[in-house]
Length: 227
Image (cartoon, rainbow, N blue to C red; front, side, top):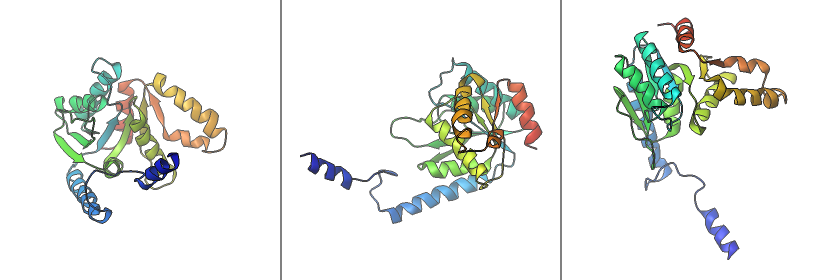
């Protein structure tokens, strides 16, 4: 009985890109169309844009929601566009701050079966089915990453950017972690485990800046991301 069940499970796909009833060859056309539409739309944005990302579960009462909203407003007033993942939580806060400040508020929304409803504060919305296409848009068009407290998705985007910079697949750009109390434990672990074991160089930590003061963040971005 166990052997039959095990064999049955092994015959099922290990992963599922989507629920479309088409073969992989035909699915490529959907993927290509997302790339084309994304490149066409994002290339029309003629100002530097800053990505702000973090947890989709952060409530409006949370201090980091309020910080994301305030930071996005300050950056929009300074002339920068804002990109988020287009969903709730920190993403909503950043889009709201940019939109209400009269700035460009871009949302790269992802279609998920059980969550990620688009927030209403995007004045430049784009929609994606595939995470990897969406991530290319973030990496290609963002001039700076601001990482608010988040979950696996936020860590994925953070470490993806660090990996691409470390391996020289993209040029270095500012990566700012907001909230030393949240990120401190992770950075300590990286130093005590990864650096100590020789898995990364100590200089790799210079790719990351940790800040708590929003005015300091804006000043740093204005100094490093030229309008």
